[in-house]
Image 1 (cartoon, rainbow, N blue to C red):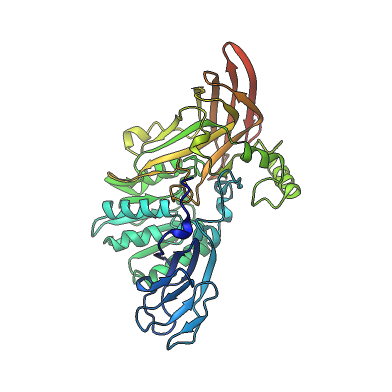
Image 2: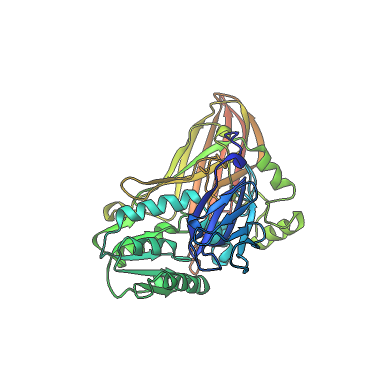
Length: 434
């Protein structure tokens, strides 16, 4: 944490899809209509008073309360719609444990898509990379288009057509509606279904996708992108992202660990509901699952190690396997209590844009609101000292037939002090292997 007071930050305004505007002022965040209800003045160019939490339209100076949306003064009496109000930078804190969003992919609704749209780290990186890569006249595939924001940026960059594939018909309809409102109805082609089952009428110049989980492949992105490269991309075309590296590092995260033996994740509904959720998954205990958590860099007990690289170049991707087993060895660099592993990815989106979700400064906006980090806990916390070693074998097995986004992760190993084995751990999100 930086110690910086968010309430002291100057107001900021950012236009969002769906003609909405995000306003940050006095340590609070509001999502409102981007147009004044009086004569449709663009509020992104208005004035925000952080003392009174009011926004004024630049056109006729109508003023609105950001908390309630009520008209305060001006020629118009109609209220301004407020979609969300709260304390920014969001509803989460350091070491706060959440159920893994990637494991609930098929249940994502508008609320989670709105969270992704407000993810400053994600949005800035993809917008910059798309502007760098897409050229006028390009034909683009937005794979996993969601509410259509990446497609919109590609169209604004001059794409002749964008095919948008998404499995969620309701969310895809939202994307088509928003892009039509933005004037792109004739250049956006929505396609509903699983990409493995679909065909395109032409090869595309660029495949854009953001189907990575916080451990990179926990939404089966490598198999999906390999298929898209082979069947949809023209020879010599571009994949965005380019390279994606995933990492694991042992951490001391006692606050996060305590939640798993207490009330459970923030969104699990309490201890009893969490136990029922684990039973429904066939999980033996809370340590048979990974979690979404912002884990501080100060809690790293060793240097991160690369566990997997995804390279979409045909020669490199030809040997990509969705099931793998990786042995890793760590030397502990500081005293602490080992409670599990932090996972994250770094994606090379374009030649000059990298998306690194390892950051931990929530106030400074270096964290990802939607991804956070992957937390792989161990059941028994172990006190370690500098010079101790942690040996890990990390395994991924691809999902069974009929599970396009599924996988099983296993993390097992031991903690050593000199030649003595201090403790062993063995956890898996699926049934034990033979």
